[in-house]
Length: 265
Image (cartoon, rainbow, N blue to C red; front, side):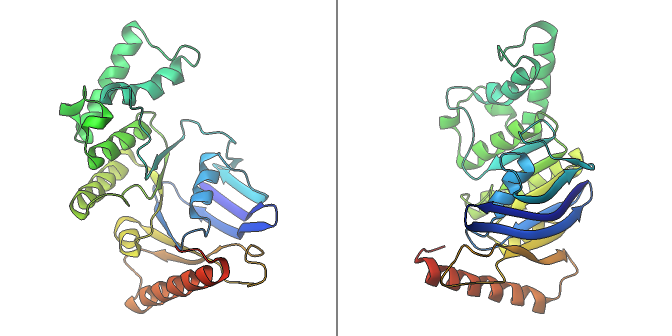
């Protein structure tokens, strides 16, 4: 479904990603881990169409991924991307309204009734049926993230992109969200790419785990080399020694990043 062919992403002299080649089949759940600044979110934006490749190709079903977001791809960010002036139900249906009526952003009659029914059914699935008329400021963090997921799914995307969606949630709520996203992945037969800083979360949720890491470092030119996918692991078949090696590799990369840039990750 997704083919990545010798992909590079550069911003001027700063190389973010270098020479990545992978294929992903429909229905896979790929989790992406790596230190801050190694290009995971940039790669997600390239899948969405917000960023384009400097070199190489990024294909979906054999054709270049469109250079703007469309209904084939939905995304959920860590920060809740909801409209504060709209209630929960309106937040979900607005994407479908602009899809059917790009100029007015409004639906009427039978079309609107159908979209409202779809939205209410989706809110039921994500556990927000009783909060349909509430506004975002009246919701907890977990509820707002459920709303963001409903927003992404209402357009029935084939690919769901998750950019650290649970990082700001308490452990108990996070566990509930894990269960929810796995249920939705199976029910909607989604292909999922999820960025996380939590290696355990990556192994728990995904069917496949990618580790982004810079294998080449130049202290005099920190941006000269980009990240590659250094591990591509089938979840459930990874020895404990490999997991330990990944954790150690990420720690070493983080220390080098701090030493070269003076920043903290």
